[in-house]
Length: 136
Image (cartoon, rainbow, N blue to C red; front, side, top):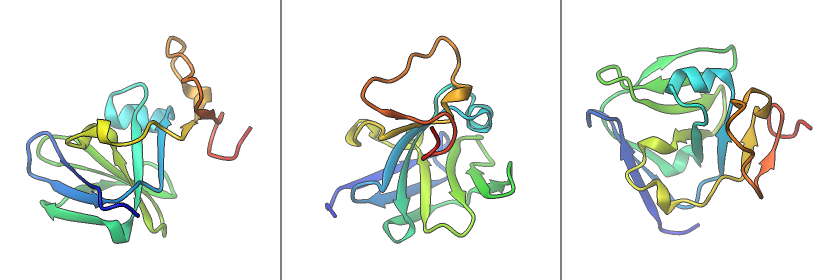
């Protein structure tokens, strides 16, 4: 694990966080829930294990859009912040909330490509799954 520190937060600054080291995974998700949660056609995530994540200030609001995961956002400004599968020891951080998203590697995966908007091209050299990771 490297000593790289990634910090980020919401638009209004009420919520700040820190994630350390290299992410477990980096991905783009084209699912319709992520699109609606963020208002973006291709939200990107960096997943960190919980032992490398610290909430520095504020308290995100949670919302369950599915039976298996929770989404978190800032109640004050509406920024989409985190996604976590129930019982998982990893937290997916929305790339757009990082202070320096360029400090992370490009995505490993493209998930839920069957919902990709027609004018968004496939990202070359990045594994593509029609649905969840592992589907073909």
